[in-house]
View 1: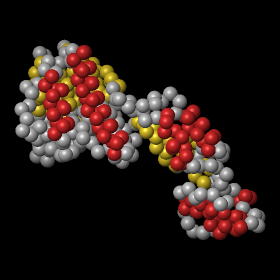
View 2 (view 1 turned 135 degrees about the vertical axis):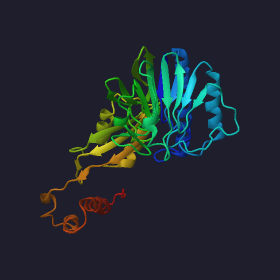
View 3 (view 1 turned 60 degrees about the horizontal axis):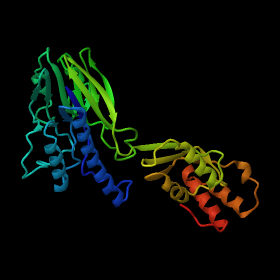
Length: 357
């Protein structure tokens, strides 16, 4: 039996922290189409069930358009069961209000629900304040069956409202624990009989979700579950560190950034993080750099973590206005970051240049 384990799709997410309103709308549409592409893939591969381990939606605000889109794609894939377990972001009381649910869309509640497919049992429960303490004792699985359990939460050694206590699930004859909540792929042993896995999200939404995103394709039979991560995102988010120490011109900085990003697909979202040190001579024009790199990628962001470096000999005996200004700032009790910013702005002003903050 082939099964897809996915989670944390976060449909109708705002995504405007980094993106413009237009880009956020485009990315939201891409998340929907990635979900649809995954269903296409499931049909092509002969998948019998798609496990959605929480956070199909991002909040209680679910648009009618998105709800219609999901139901239509599920309904048309009539040969596949969709087992939807709500997560902590699925706050909408009924995202499909007023609509008849397709027969192949299966749901869970606050008590254990079991679905059986041949020798495979898929069990799931939605964690809440009233059931987290007793859920471990009430889980009943037959040892001779191929048991898959779905939960949404953070793995822990102790139980809690949004915590999954792994020690209390050991010895329960679980072959595969399909988890949602963590947005990156992780797989570990649960006990000698089985393993637990976070499949990650289908599409990254911010730069805290860098790297390949997708789902896990499972094959379950005769008491064994084998899983393979399938990268599937339309775009990936990449963070690229660039050491700018000893670089002085804006051309050198841009070339270093381009070199560091070699191999990254032009359709991806890229965050360059500048590291190392810079001096008064460094042409660190972030706006120019961003604009010059934007044609190479779908989205570009630059974060500056470089540190200002100034040697005493460059200003200690300088009798000019510039030297006096630098000595005055360096003798102040401001932070090193503030001193660097003041000196850079001051030198730009003294040189008649445009001040770049």
